[in-house]
View 1 (tube, one colour):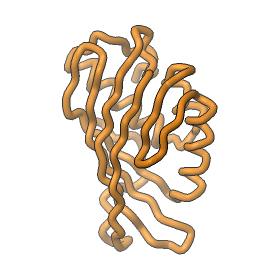
View 2 (view 1 turned 90 degrees about the vertical axis):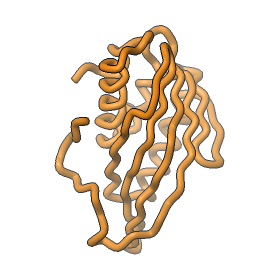
View 3 (view 1 turned 90 degrees about the horizontal axis):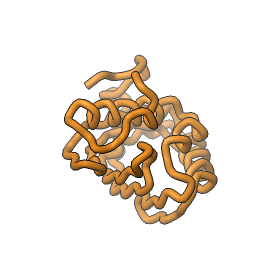
Length: 145
């Protein structure tokens, strides 16, 4: 699988699918530096009700996120794309420190610079409490579309 930055606009269906898979793989690594490396230095984010800019802020956000969202596992699905934009739907599951599991449902809209780095990310996300036996996502390695 190519690195997320090796996949550049303008996107084709195949390259958009590859970009989505590369992003899913990076997020499932739970490595804030790996994930943040796919964004421009001044990347603008909206994540739920938080708005921030830049790689340092992205890394700080992800460290906070994964300190709270334990056993995080994500899947993304290509929804639509244009020359330099991709929209995805996603689900991820996680548990809190008390053992309560959640499934998050959401949509993301991504805009890319010519070098393949993401310069804008808008994410809308809703969490639903679930029982452990209702989990659909297990940490079994990278998922392919």
